[in-house]
Image (cartoon, rainbow, N blue to C red):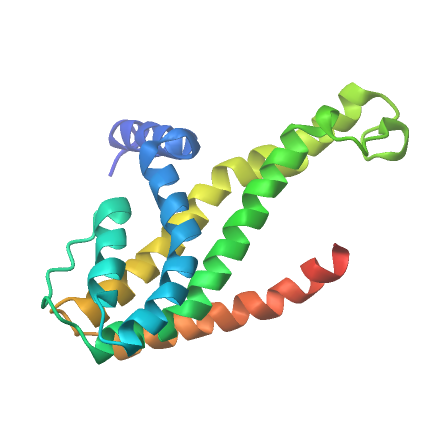
Length: 197
């Protein structure tokens, strides 16, 4: 690929990255991440009594993620398995997404924080300097990183839905292993963050 062919490709990728925080797709993914954990918890007892837990979980993924989880009407034990196995990744996805969007808000909205004392903050002693440091150091990078983190989580969550509640079971053990590993790594990485709070 020569330089003239690379320029439009780079420009297109840059446009995609810069638009990501402001697209409906990103916010649908955030909505799914926010709802997946409580819906999954609710579906455990529903599945235990033979209710439509699979249909509920599949419907949420279809509406917000556009997942085509064509599957059997009654999923029985698979709906319970999905609800239980997806709980750790749903919890981690919600925690990380909430934390990252909070980092964006508190850094871009630095002047609005009640605890802001620019003389004691990085970039101080002026409010403009402190705000610039917080925006450039935390707000803007996280603004453009967070949609991609959310996309990664929802791709994994969608694969669990199609594997457990759809007809395509290929690669399901591998997907479950990846989900468990991601949840474990995020849990370990959350320890220092929790200690900072």
